[in-house]
Length: 214
Image (cartoon, rainbow, N blue to C red; front, side, top):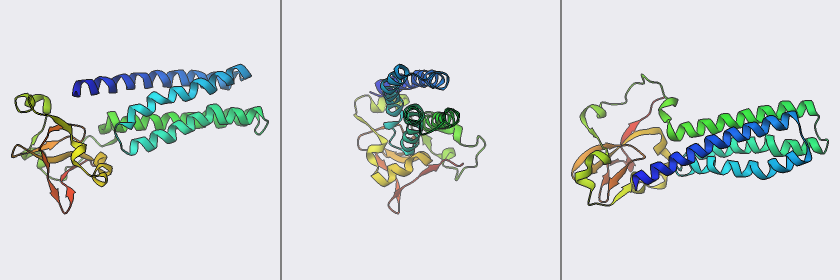
């Protein structure tokens, strides 16, 4: 199940990269030569190209979704709303070129940040960041694939299933969560899977974990 999920995520990421390339080419065409046929093509293709990018982060259920949606709205605005305004004479060609290019670049940047938040979050944090505590020195890091003897005959569930909605909203800023698995305390990555029956360590109604430090 884990392998299938990872393959699906990789395919979505690849489709997202292809979509970004195609959208960039369409934006260049819009900036150099706007015609009714090109606008019609953009109106049809552009929304469809945003779907893989949204799906690539929606499974994460984090703030990355908000960043992605805003970025996609900027991209669609630069490729659909602004050309429409130009076609009806609301803005001049020079103003259109500048506004469309800025909105498109902003949108692509936000899309990139959103994907980094999901697939490479460590890029947003300092390499030599200080630790909140020494938990990683004394507690083993859980790795379901290396614990095949323990999990081969047991159902695995996402760690997120053990957390409530409030905890899931805070989860993206944590590197590890403390979880008791078969009586042993482990550091579990937020995106990892644990056996059914595992118990999240909580303090004052909130899970205990190791935070990422900006």
